[in-house]
Length: 331
Image 1 (cartoon, rainbow, N blue to C red):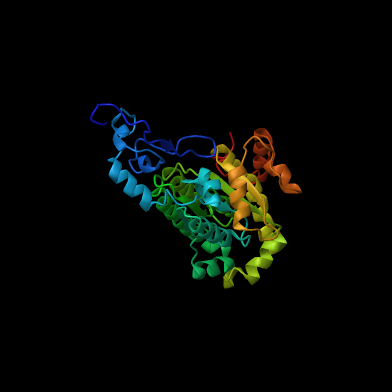
Image 2 (image 1 turned 120 degrees about the vertical axis):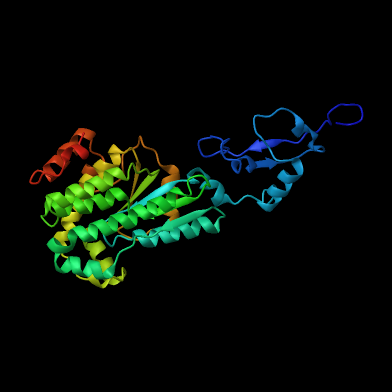
């Protein structure tokens, strides 16, 4: 206020940033979010003394913080475009060799380049144990799946530590995907019923598991096998049996989708028969509409666009020859 006790005519204007749906990006429980305010114009900072639902830092502190964060720099178009997925947890899914790791690494790089926070948690696999498994599945399947589950759970826990700082996190294979492998091997007789019960017990006790999106990279089995041999770099997977991969595809497009649907995660299938770009995936996430049918061709179209009852019937048929605790998968 001036000496006359009146406000200056041109007060400071505060504009709150919003996401793609117009929701404020300010969270009252996190003081860091309160700094996501743009100081635009004005001759006096006294206007900030008026009552406000936000607990703001002092005007000088706010201005210094905004300058430090680049608030007065020309906005980055891509950063603005991708802002609605800020803070999202995204699981990368698909068959062995489809290209999840490549996509996850490049997605992180693209977001970092436009000034967003991003992390990628790569799937961990012990080459020695994989070699033993492919040599003798009945002997080593349980040990391998337990090890893979523990590594994936560790990635999930690391990602959860970033839940409140707007970091976009990409996780290389979901916990639901790991469970599909274990269920398939139980069905095949490589994992015993007591071992499956122990696996399920640990799986349930460590849950629930949540993700904002599951990106499902879709490619033909032959293409995935070709990539596993030429690009994946794991000696143990150079000669994957065709029957094994075909069986895995069948389980993935039935049990996996049932699991994700049950947990109400958003599935984003993307044709990956030819490598696309990280921007293709980011654009699909930004444009995602749960009310639109999935754009998947061939036999996968049936699995992706099946009703809940149709998917349950497909799952029962898949598991019909082995007792796999159906109640945990089928409503």
